[in-house]
Image (cartoon, rainbow, N blue to C red):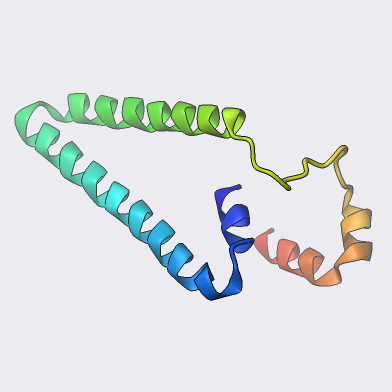
Length: 102
């Protein structure tokens, strides 16, 4: 959802917005790796692995909560699920790209 919202940014600000978004993601990954390596040096490997899984789960819950309470003007939630034949009719290119994933 976050990348979908980034695509709606004004055209002249889109590149810088995506670069800031990616920079924040990479900085978070680097910081997480640093913290995990420091914990692994201090504690046993099993504690580091457990901490990694616990932090990953906590971040997932936090992001889910943020998306739940987030209200974005102009964002329309689909009223029903689209079926494959509807997607194929509306956009054959999309269906072709989805087939590459299989």
